Length: 553
Image 1 (cartoon, rainbow, N blue to C red):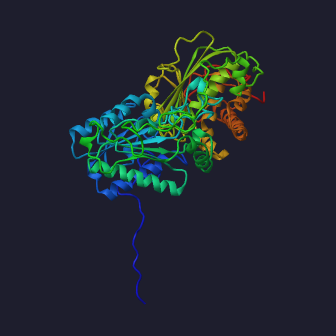
Image 2 (cartoon, rainbow, N blue to C red):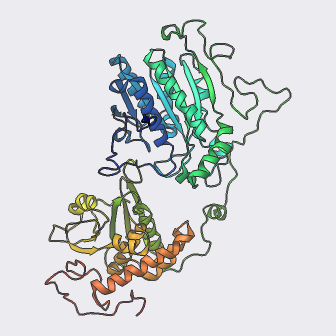
Image 3 (tube, rainbow, N blue to C red):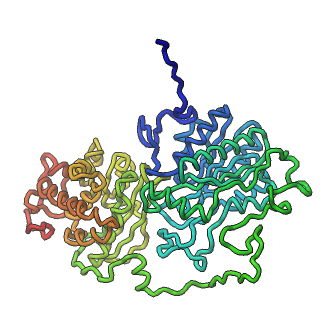
């Protein structure tokens, strides 16, 4: 019997690193959210680089956005650019490295927002670079705000009632805008909506890079990409929404392809602009707008009337839009011994920022003054994150907590980063499940809580931060457990998760009762170090007293 010979048809591109260390040592998957289009596009770029044999010539210009850490994935030359300035950096590389293949990879905020002037001038100069524009119609890294490409009626954090032409204007059509310029040689919009459309995107990316290798000039590929997390959809729903809602506004297709144009001739008098367009400007057709450039005005059609000022909304209207409960929470009677300057720190995905919001909302419910200020790394999931929360009876001068008197350290990097910033006599609550060491300073009070292990036993590690806040509430007295229970249902958008978060509170209460003070008799914020209970040899200087924090008291 003759032996069969097999060949590998598809495999991981050689221009991608074997492992993605940004996600963790030896990680095979990226930090991108499930269903995100960035990973797909990275693969398409890497395959094109391999097939064109240009890996040692490519310089990849990363933007500020979800793909800021592209240099952890693409094994090519990489430069991290200032926000929106990738086309300017790419232009400088082009003019100083003649044989480089320069890719400017940008999102809708980076390119169409803060970087709008940069992309227009680079395109107008006809720089021999390839720009790949990821259009997901929303700001992804910062949590889902309106982008320049957000479509009308689309709801975002900053347009909770939907984008309106009267208030926020129309979405920008970047491919059509670039098509009004003479210099570009290739302009195409593609979609990741289906497998077949992904293959068309693959072809467009390859052509754009091939034109650059032949020194033809400026190429621009706009890629409609899903963002399930910020669209609040499943990955499958996001692909359908992309096809049914985004593509009609941003129709895929080629706007310009000049394979025979010599870059030096572009811009000369009478030089062609876009194919099939009268004149050299290549004016685009903007869907849905009568009389737009490149589209004959409909005879007798009235121009759209746009109100210069949106209708004023009452406070009640705003509360309804935000989904706020109209019934105020009962005001508590908490009396703080000292102002609480709390730093909550961990990595993205541990609920650090939402936990800070939860704590601040509880403080408001107690009738206290509070501020919340988030800080996070370049990507929300997997990067570093911390939240500053101030709680006081008095007016708070600034939201920043640079010297906390309470630190909730959810992982080792957070303890390493912030231990030295805690004021002498302050308190550190350590997630001992993920932190293998103890607090090194002797002038602080330390509490070691196996929060991740406890959360995992309940069914999900994401509630570890709620366990930590519960223990903080018990030892500080800044908020009551009753208030925490009332606020949790109002703070969680997915109501199916309310029950497990309430169980996290129960777990925190049980741990505190068992490990910290047995009978809840220890005074709040005791002047001893605690490690899974009282540290060896430590004793309380005050006699046990009954605590109103104990739900069973």
